[in-house]
Length: 152
Image (cartoon, rainbow, N blue to C red; front, side, top):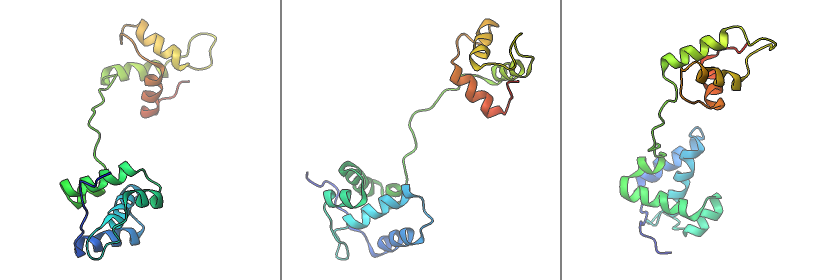
């Protein structure tokens, strides 16, 4: 595979990367790209390892090595070390009023013959009451967990 982005680090960049790794306080998500860049450096002070050798030594894929090199060449050192933020935005399934109805229902007395509310029963009650058109049990569970509401 032909290398499209050749890494030639400056002395300042090498110092930043070695200090980052030597400090040990940086998360692994930051240290791994730093190690990749140091091994891929083809400058006078760099070892100029191949992608396959770097991938084997750091236990990552060759594509990961190529992506880190490309990010460094295209956007610089800071971008190569940081994970890119997710592009997708997650729409909330319940708005504030619907969450309030769910919490109020969960805090109310459980159905007759039951000691506490079941998550599936809560989901069914929300649909039955016309608060939501449809809702999954996992949405109910995570909403109650987030609000620290007890089911009984």
